[in-house]
Length: 422
Ligand SMILES: Cc1cc2nc3c(=O)[nH]c(=O)nc-3n(C[C@H](O)[C@H](O)[C@H](O)COP(=O)(O)OP(=O)(O)OC[C@H]3O[C@@H](n4cnc5c(N)ncnc54)[C@H](O)[C@@H]3O)c2cc1C
Image (tube, rainbow, N blue to C red):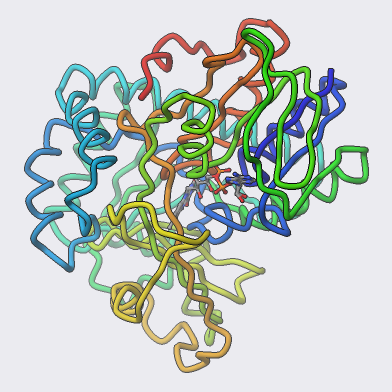
């Protein structure tokens, strides 16, 4: 079949891989000049299936006040009068109850673990080198409050079949010796989590697929479709028209406007985050693996054989911004430096400003925080989007499910609990 994949981020390129494996003739279209140029460009690089819990939860209502009033909170709402946010927020709050939290937690955690296994297989099959390792992540706690919350989370995920092992300060330092100069009180270890550079992975997979006959059309913007009855016949871009037997829309935040153009609604809101990549000054002082500080919610990951450190934080509801990456100011990056230094002092070359990379992009979040993996509106138009805060972890599993649906097979992952998405 002639398959057209819209978008060359993590979801689009992994979808192209799974469709190529099925023997389809695949073309991928993207408006940027390279793959992984938007949200997949500089995320935290953590494969953190153990943290695949839904954002709506019974405590969400109380968190909204802080998001509106505390300018230093990791989660902030800066554009309140936004019809898109009100609609999305209403749906989000409809899931913020104990029953839905339990149902969505089970579905999301199980799916994320399935996806992690699928990514591991893809890395093995393609031999792509992207700093991939799956030997656990350490989530550190600097207060008794966050350590108590880590214990609560560990017992919650254990009920759902995942493992998080809470350890005291001494044990955390044996796992991560560079934490010795920090004030941490303990940590939790997720032994099945991992890390890898998602931009390198996506771009290397693009090369790998190009060498095997997959066509990539860059610098081309998807504008719409031509349809006959309930089937898409072709995809229209600003430069060409592509005949299609099957179409997969993997447009990340761009899914919303594309859906509107073809008379559908995609319940995705862009939740902005800020990412820094800083050269390492003293390799003996950096962590061996990635992690998250449970108190400040900075995520960090050593990249490029430990020569650089990626640090990300922030979840800002700022509306849809013009342009393809988010706007930022120096103040948006103050939490990165202060909170990383508190954990790993004097490890990074903060003065080497010319080699520090600043970046901002938005997570394509659905209200339920489950991804959208479905055929919708047309018989042969599939959506693979809305993986939100955990799209690197979920990339290959999502693509595998889409390829199963297109083949008319029962999906490799039981989608029952994933179906009520939004
Ligand atoms: C700060 C931050 C940290 C994160 N950390 C992690 C992490 O540690 N682990 C994890 O698992 N996930 C993480 N994520 C989430 C992950 O990065 C995203 O879920 C993932 O990158 C989304 O991939 P995507 O392919 O859906 O979107 P994108 O990467 O944005 O790809 C969409 C593509 O569609 C193209 N496009 C859009 N509209 C059009 C159009 N009309 N025509 C042509 N092309 C179009 C764009 O050019 C883009 O290339 C993080 C996200 C952020 C923001």
